[in-house]
Amino acid sequence: MNEQTTFQKTDLGDLSRDLANRAEAFCQHYFPDGRKQGNYWQIGDTSGASGQSLAVRLQDNAGRKAGNWTDYASGEFGDLLDLLHENLGSSRFADTIQEARSFLGETPSEPNRATTQSPAEASNKRIAQARKLFEYGKPTFRTLASAYLLNRGINRFGPALRYHPSVFVRVGNDEDAELEKRPALLGKITDNNGIITGVARTFLNPQTKRVADMESPKRILGQLHGNAIRFGKGAYRQDLIAGEGLENILSVGTALPDSDVVSCLTANHLGMFIPPKSIKRLWIARDNDKAGEEASARLRKRAEHLGIWCGDLVPKLDDFNKDLVDYGVERLRLYLQNSMKEQAEA
Image 1 (cartoon, rainbow, N blue to C red):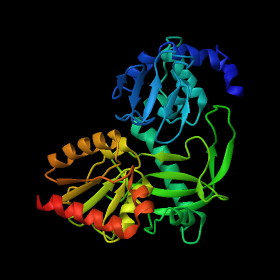
Image 2 (tube, rainbow, N blue to C red; image 1 turned 90 degrees about the vertical axis):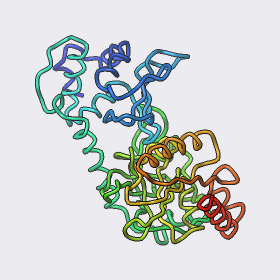
Image 3 (spheres, helix red, strand yellow; image 1 turned 60 degrees about the vertical axis):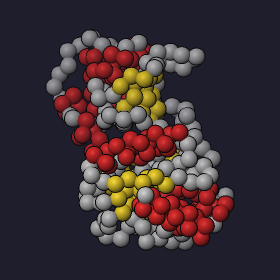
Image 4 (cartoon, one colour; image 1 turned 180 degrees about the vertical axis):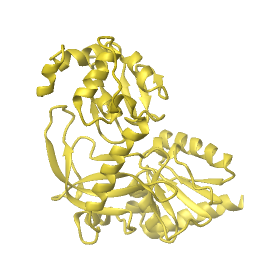
């Protein structure tokens, strides 16, 4: 990197370590909406939104370095310089270095686009990339994406899904790993107004027609917080089913093909989902585990505050895709219909 020579610290490793030594102060300064959980500072994403998907390690522990972070929703990771660069949304790494040095007290910060840009503007860059990627995708009909879903017993598709044969991805958990091209199922993430805020990428193996054997084969680009991948016909009706993983909610949608369903992709984001105010009943199709139970409780509290009645849909096995595969679509449909009827009449 030639622009390094313009700075007193030519070794970015030293600069990164200096930031790591002040990791907690760094997080408090740039991500005040986050919160400390043990040895980690948790935020929603690189924009600094509140949430728990992105975790920054605050102190060295068991050989793991302070300052390293992982976004468990998108699969991204790096050190504090990488995180600062993403947060600032600057196209010039020189601006990021200048800001880092200013934080460390080495030089006064000069006003520029990077230091005056809001977190929302930084997030918009990633949202724009997500929209472009989804636009380049093609319909899933007779593609590896449809083969993958059909192999899992799923036949509920829709315009929220597309397929791309060669999406760039950094494979492995190595910061020096090269970018590779992999085929991926794309899921369009939208807000309640139908505006695209992100895209979910499920990387696939062309030989097995299953999820790719790689670190974090499911990654998110853009803004998921409060939003979801949506499957329905036109405007929302009275009932909406919200669930965790894409395959699990599509399994519910396969059993109940006329229902409006949305996937929040993770238990954490199911708990943060913002339900449309126009619906009357929200069915929470969670996984059969503690994370799903906690997410359901958080979402129920938010929905009931909006005057929306809530019901829980819990699979017999670990998740609804396992129920679909093991029991078949007719038994799953009957189970869901009976569960919804019993709760509605209670």
